[in-house]
Amino acid sequence: MTGGGGGGGSRPTYIAIGTSTANFSGTGGRRGVLTVETGLDVADAALHTRASQSAPRLRAAYNQVIARVAAGLRGDAPPDVERLARELQAATDQALGRSGARLLLGTVMAF
Image (cartoon, rainbow, N blue to C red; front, side, top):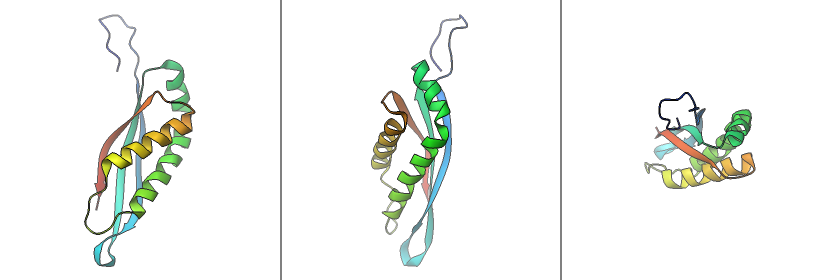
């Protein structure tokens, strides 16, 4: 939330996008699942409205990125969270048509 000093002028800036999952092949032919929780912090009011309305488009873009990252997972190596964050931020900017919405990652789990 934005900081405010007592007046009722603050408004939420957080938008929950949700959890996305993708399958991958683990060691020994085992199947695995990559799970990623995402949200956005959007301070600009107009962009916040656009991001809220674009939630289905953002989820679809995030699913594509997460599936691509999951396909690249090999062995017991953990996912590269820095790469994942960069790619999800790029997908956010592209889906919204401009930068200004900051991607927030929750739990990133491969099991």
